[in-house]
Structures are given as C-alpha cells and as structure tokens.
Image (cartoon, rainbow, N blue to C red):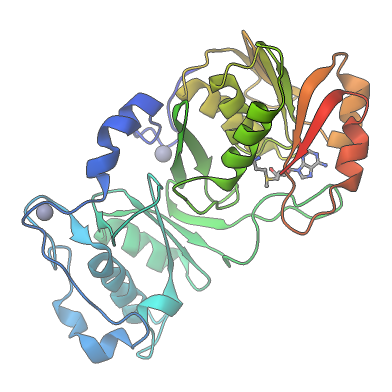
Length: 331
Ligand SMILES: C[S@@+](CC[C@H](N)C(=O)[O-])C[C@H]1O[C@@H](n2cnc3c(N)ncnc32)[C@H](O)[C@@H]1O
Ligand SMILES: [Zn+2]
Ligand SMILES: [Zn+2]
C-alpha cells in the first residue's frame, strides 16, 4: 500500500519519523518571542488588525506563537465579514494541531500544522486563510459539539465540510510498546483529545495484564474507528487482530494506520466495494455492522473490544458478539 496522502503532500508519517520530530514540532526555539493576547476580549480592542500579516510575530526559525496564527486567521474572517469587531480568539475558531499530542505549554506553530474548525465560514474566506496563513493545513466548517461519523446503526452520518486544504491529521499516542500514530481525515473521523496517558489504552493495558491471554491472543476490535486499540494489541503481541467498523472512512484510516505503524498491508480494496477492506499477515479489516459480524466471521477471539461513542447504548453491540469472544472489554 502506498503511504501517500490524496493531496500529494507528505501528510502521512510513520511512527519512527514522528518520534524523531515530536519534541521539536511545537516548541519555541531560543529566539521565539512569547505573545499574550486575551482570548476572551475582542481582538480588535487589543491590536491594530492592519498590522497583522504573514511575518507578524514570526521568529527567524519560521514558527509563530499559536495566538499570532489565530489572530491572523481572525483578522481575515473579520475582513471578510464572517466575524465582527466583537469577535474573540476563543469564540471564533477551534485550533486542531497536527501532529496532535499533549502539550505542556502553548505551542509555536510551523507551516501546515493547524487545522481550523469553525461554525461560520465560506469558501472564499477559507481559501484566503489557506493561502495567506502558512501554518494552516485545512479549513473545516462545523460545530465541535457534533460528533463526526456514525454514532450507531440507527443514526445519520455527520461530517464536517472541508472548505480548503488537506484535513489529514495525525494523533500521537505514547504507549508502553512505543508511539502509535493515528492518522485521520478530520472532516470524517471524530476528534480525540490528546492526553499523556490515553484512558482507553490504559484500560486495555490493564485488561491484558490482568487476564492471562495466550501469547498469540486473538482480538476483535469491533468498533475500531481509525484502528487505535487493535493496533495497540498488535504492538502488545497479539497473534491476530480483526478490525471492524460500520463507517467506511474509519476502515480506510485503519488500513493506512496499520501500514504507518509498521504492519504491512497485503491486500486493500481501495474502492471499498466489499466487506473485507484489507488484510496483512496477522490482521484483517472489515466494514460491517457489528450486528451482522457473528454470521460472517467463522472464528473465536480471546478478546472483543467494544468502544461505542459516548451516549450509545452498548447492549446490542455486546449481544451481537456474544458467541464470538471469550472476553469482552467495553471501553
Ligand atoms: C468511539 S469510536 C471508536 C474509536 C476507536 N476505538 C479508537 O480508539 O480510535 C466508535 C466507533 O463505533 C463505530 N460504530 C458505530 N455503530 C457501529 C456498528 N453498528 N457496527 C460497527 N461499528 C459501529 C463508529 O463508526 C465509530 O468509529
Ligand atoms: Zn494531505
Ligand atoms: Zn524561533
């Protein structure tokens, strides 16, 4: 499988590349100057907006404090009458940094490291932001409170609107088995907040530790999203992982993430015409409703992971895999 982003740029990283660059990615150099803007006060009351341009607040290392970048974006939105003079940094856009990992301090951004999510935007303004603000990788229109994807089989899928750029983002998770990089097109896959210790990985690790599974244990990651938990199991020594998700973009991302984390993909149905999306030596990826998976899979698993969206009743999910798994972990 070619590890190439649809946009043609180097958006996809492998976990080793990420590890090398991660510390420096969003840190200031010794010359970067700090900036303090009041996030809840109108930007226009704090600055002469005409003074903001691409070089404004930029260090010779090429980075700018996140507030400089956000102020630049908001200035364009005010000029384009998407926002008004009362607009603040806090109420205008949600900054989604890539690669995403837990930050101790406010970040300094380099080119192509910020995806902007905002409820008010039009194509023209998005294009201007994309062209003028070099840190911006993509502009998405949507409400952060609306979860992207399919919540369960009975709900209508929801996506953010990609108005400019490429929205491929990479989350980094530190685990006992090394870093895992989870790519996602942010318009199509839900947002996870980066944490020092991922609560999902922590409960899965505890489960693996407390239940003496065979050394080559088999796992069904039944609602895999972009593949995080199953990929962790492979790193932790699973003999086989079957990934499944009802949402096609999730299964494409799982396939890409398997490859970018070092698991070779031997077959990939790029057109997503069949239930089986991809496979490699010790994994398979399916695009199915969990309620049908029992009649489709003809094998037993040591562990089935069910990770539904918050607010979704997992009972039907658990019932659906009852005959397939010796153990079920609901996350
Ligand atoms: C919270 S996300 C999973 C996140 C994933 N475990 C991770 O850590 O990246 C929930 C997933 O359940 C999937 N889902 C919802 N209904 C489903 C169903 N009936 N069958 C299979 N997957 C389903 C959604 O598409 C979504 O990807
Ligand atoms: Zn891209
Ligand atoms: Zn600098």
